[in-house]
Each structure stands twice: as C-alpha cells, then as structure tokens.
Length: 365
Image 1 (cartoon, rainbow, N blue to C red):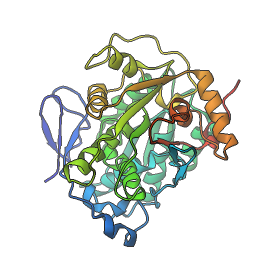
Image 2 (image 1 turned 90 degrees about the horizontal axis):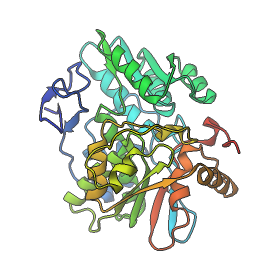
Image 3 (image 1 turned 45 degrees about the vertical axis):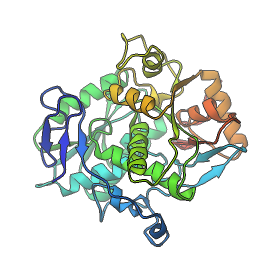
Image 4 (image 1 turned 135 degrees about the horizontal axis):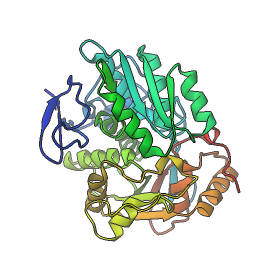
C-alpha cells in the first residue's frame, strides 16, 4: 500500500490519514511509490493528457481531469526551446499537481467536507478549479497583495477566498492553522507529495516529445520548488529504468530580490542560511523566503549537476517584453527562466513558460 514517508526522520503514515505533515518533525511528506517504466512506443495511442504516463503515476483513471498536460514544445533559438505550460486549463503549470490533489481528496474515505489551499495565486486557482470539477468545497488563502486577476479567477471557480495581510509566509501559516480542523483536507502543493508526482509529468513530456531523450539542461523557476522536485523525480525514474543515457543539468532560477536557495547553494550549505529580508519582486510566484523543502531542493540541484541563477527586476521586465515580441505573453514570474537562459548558445536547454500574461499583465516600468 502506498504511504506517506518523512524524508528527514523516517516516520510514515497511511494515505487516508488526515495528517498533512510529519507529526514528529513537522516536515513535508514524501511518497512511498515505485514507478514502473513508461513504454515510449505505446504513448501515441493513449489519452492526450498527462494521464498517458499511467505507469509513473500514483493515481490512475481520474474523473477530475480537464485535459491538463501535453503542452507544446517550441524552439525559439538554435539551442533553447520553451514549453508552453501556460496552455493548461487554468493557465499555469500548477494544474499538473492540482489535479492529483483533487483526485486524491475525492477518493479519501468519507470525502473531506472542505479542501484548503494556500498560494501566491496560481496554485490556489488550480486547486479551486479542480475542486469545482470534483464537486469539493474549497477555501483558498492568498496574500492580500495577490494580483487582482488571480483573485478573480479563484472566486470564479466558486472557492471561498481568504485574503491574508502580510507576505507569502503569513499566508502559509494561516492555512496551516486551519488545516487541522475536522473534515479538512489540506491540498498543499508544498507538503503533499502527490503534487510533485503531477509536476514530474513535465519532464516525461519533454522525454516523449524529444523522442526518448532530453536536452542538456532543464531550466526551472524555484520558489517552493514543486516543479524542480517533480523534474528531479522524473529524471531519477527515467534514468533508473534505463530510458535515458545522459544526465541533464537541472538549473534553478530565482529572482535576485528573494533568493534564499541560491544564497545557500553558492555558500555550499545543505540548508537555508540565516534569513534575510525579502524585497518586493515582479516574480511573485517564486518569492518564497523559507521553502519547507529547501534541503531536498538543494540536494536535487547538486545531484543533477546543476546550479542556481538569479535575475534582476530589469531582466524580468526585458524578458517579458522579449517573449511578447516573439508572440508569447507570459506572466512576470513565468519569464524568469527566459531571462536567465534565453540567450544560451553553448548547450541545448528547455525553459518553461509557467503562467499566462493575462494573470498579471505587463510588468510596470
């Protein structure tokens, strides 16, 4: 039986438990799940969504799917391609993980009376949409400074909205305080590992679209690290199953204004350093000063021969304008990786465009 397992202290818990984090050390859960090899030759005949990778997923036969996944891979330069992950049902890559959480909640014994999520916007929108699809009552906690379009989108899906004064960390604390209530399922894209098993399909799609291979570098934005850790999980599975020969470098990108992981990585640390004040940034979706999975993120980047890059606010503005001039209107968080790697010529790389520009509009000068 698949169970939750704490990667730090080894504590385990059944999936149908209401415990959203390790009861001993309060850390995020991992999942005791062993993926099977995905048969590349069989994929063209399967459903055209992320659920085609059934052997790699801890849940199958979903009823909450909205057709998420299978986003286009588009070459923009001679060496750098972009994956249009804003072309998903709620216009961000977070749909990949949110569908897994909603599907899990729907299957729990007794079905929760209420689903709770916290977010800077996109994850909350995705959880709200998939809870609506599953017929689950949903409440989403977001910082009061969240962009108006994301707030509107969450409300449009029928979720109750809790606007929290303060930063992203204050929002997470408010949601965690509510998560212990009776009949509540905390659909945390940070603490619940099912979300990571959804985001790992991003790399499975790259592998399929490139004919069973991967680029020399996979570049991802990092705040709480849900896309990066999903990518690392997929790379580990593909490599262990003998489905890839090379080891792509896993490159992490943060906004210079909020870059605790980059600072720890370049200091050679295994965990976050002493906290420093977070500055305002256009990349609101990755402005996370204290990511709970920091140790795992740092370890994954090192294991896959990568590094951390940071981008300035001016570089973010320029990258958004540059992509728009190429026909792609991407939100300010979603352009961070293009700002860091769009000009590379020394190796092949794929950059995700994680959210639609309609969610935040054009970055102010």
